[in-house]
Amino acid sequence: MDMILDGGACRVGVESTVVDVSGDIPLILRPGGLTAEELKSVLGNVQIDPGLAPGERPKSPGQKYKHYAPKAKMTVFEGDLDLQVRSIKALAEKMMADGLKVGIMCTAQTRNSYPYDTVLSVGDREAPLTISSTLFSILRKFDHLGVDVILAESISNEGLGLAVMNRLHKAAGFNIVKVE
Image (tube, rainbow, N blue to C red; front, top):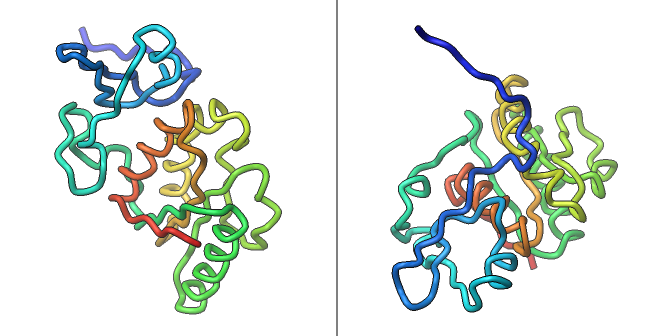
């Protein structure tokens, strides 16, 4: 008998944290809902798998592929928030002038900074749980809206932000612009 169980919306949104405890120092193979800071409070020293960096080979199978990537090409902007906003706006205007449908993934704090049609707030940058719990649904909404490209703000890598940024990097195929 085939069936689908729907447990409703996931509170955290991102997959579980995967930790390798076979060595002397526990190694986070996939950041998730259980943060590095929470693990450190119990386990002491905890490190993050260097394989999570672009171009490296991650140890956790769930990290090896571009899961949850939107259909549109995606770019993640990192750095000072004001510079992110200015850089995203400048690139969006250029791309729209070239006839592309541009989606902008921003946070509640910057939503009003973008005077364009296809702008979606993923949540509150001061409350990463609001972002992690909506991240994948926002990516699917961009698919539904048929955008050609997505320009996304980054958030802090602290706490749950580490898992959010890990998923954003993967969704963008590690297409990252550092603004300074």
